[in-house]
Image 1 (cartoon, rainbow, N blue to C red):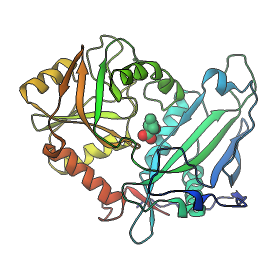
Image 2: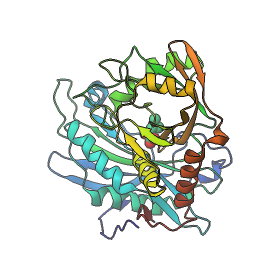
Image 3: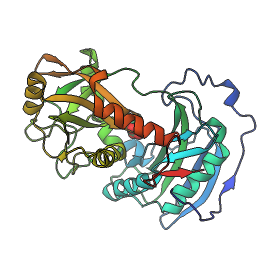
Image 4: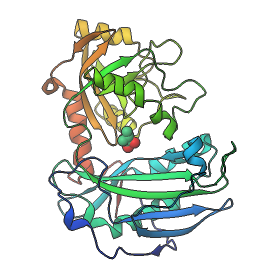
Length: 357
Ligand code: COI
């Protein structure tokens, strides 16, 4: 269990009227409905201060705000779940603080102290705990965000920043197995670039290529390396994992691939299951040959929003390759079940991954 036993001085302004009664928890979209409150802290160039929980509302921003022009902003994604006993559990929030701070260093932004991230999150979830859904397959998506607040259109790093945690009750991100297209023209990230940082630019760069793939009937891309477009990287919304000849194969993380928390959790569970794991370069050719020969048994995306998303079709050089039926996928179905059981508190948290609110 992740312990958060520090006290923080957080001001609180409650909403005058909760929006909770208006929410249809049986039909939750992804990321469109926000809870009543948000946690906010400001960095004045020296320290994080003015910690507060306030009603979720629009903010006023100068058109000269540096983030709007140069994208000095980073974010995270994590989820909270409600158990049958009504307890609220958060999945591996300590990993999100670490990754946010790695992104902060790369984007030349201040790091956020773990006490502020975890303490602010704990208080926010205590205030908005009724928003954590209990309907099957749903959860509370948590979006921490840090962005530059200097008003300056010259190009340099901001001195001031804002940190926000907002929450949204969500249903599935993908509600059916996904079709992915291997992208061999556009590049998401390169060695020495910002691909491993969870920063807006990576996602902005994916909009056009993804839209072109969507117009061809795909849901997502398999990004390939920026140098040769030969090797699997990630899918933008999730890491990519494969079972080939009974081994779990996934691209090693590095400069150009996000170090996914779901990805590393899947790897740990696979190890416990005795599954051989290969974190290595995976050539698109090997993947396609694997589909043809039957060596490729499973393909899935792993991410907070996406959870474990089965990949049912891969498009490459104009050919659509159909993958084995979802019901035959022993590993990804088992790992999904193990993670769901853990998140909803149906099994003991022996790995110490969950934070209880
Ligand atoms: C997440 O899975 O938390 C993400 O940030 C991915 C995003 C495309 C929703």
